Length: 273
Image (tube, rainbow, N blue to C red; front, side):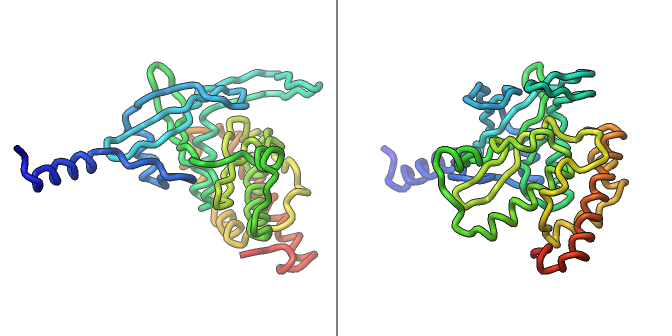
């Protein structure tokens, strides 16, 4: 018969062996820890899930024996010289690639934004794709507006997040700019940008300059510190030289616009901390 002390040790050991539960909301891991987990954790299951995304990503459960988390696996990698998008719209040199998910995360990391979930390249079975950490407990911006019809408690903080989201969308030239299903909102009102597989176009212009009204001082400082060499080193694996050049031009246009607005309206009207 086991002593009470031995039983206690056994129970404690069993509890310690159980993977930690996923947090109620937000990102369970960040930075290098998240990237390492996504690259190396054991695949527990892969399944389809209800989503409006035309790329049909899959939800993946992963564990390293200590923690269990979910991720989004996307394998799309398409190119069409001329793509018919519906409503009479077409796009030349159309691309839709999982590699842009990784590029978006790497760029977010370079700028210190924290709005794009960690993403890495990984092969699951016979398919290679992007594996992005799942944002737990979040609703889409569409759901917030159209279904729940709730409003952020601090409008100023919310607006500042949105200004930075808009800047990032302009920087990467995301053709899904208007798709508010690609914005996730957690219960603490943190906003995340997901689904960048139709971004990083070759256009050397801003998609909607008028949407850039106010700017974070910190984000502008990060943009100014960015160099072409930085982009090539960190994004060259995922983007072509033409895409990198266009990204650099858009970076310059954003900085020029911010400087121009400050000169016209003053720092207090344009910049925030």
